[in-house]
Image (cartoon, rainbow, N blue to C red):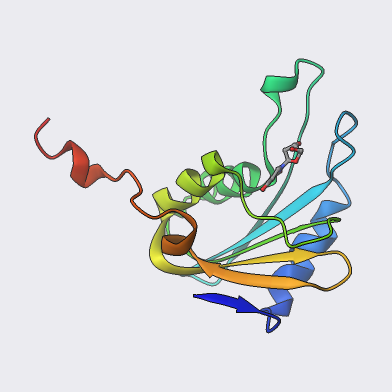
Length: 138
Ligand code: THU
């Protein structure tokens, strides 16, 4: 599924709002993420950079941590937004992090600040992903 345009605007609005709190003084690339769970709750995250660059964390990771801290484990929808020429996809590591808590059909909506959107499923974003099934012999 690669769908342009018809975004789920409410979750994107949550991501857009929380993005204002991004801490990105080194890249100047502020990212906001919002995750909805199967219980209908929304958890938000932003990127938090560090002067020791590899210690920075992505917006999606922050939202996932907030969800887990609240005791929830099942993602039903994801939204990510940044000020970019094209909708910003989750990085490779965040795709794996999302896949830990989301089924293959969960839709990830990517958005730009000027209204461009792209929707892809978790399976689209991370085909052939590593799962617990691969550890069945261990
Ligand atoms: N970043 C995110 O927070 N999420 C993404 O999906 C892509 C990248 C952040 C990491 C870093 O703080 C900045 O964007 C530039 O890579």
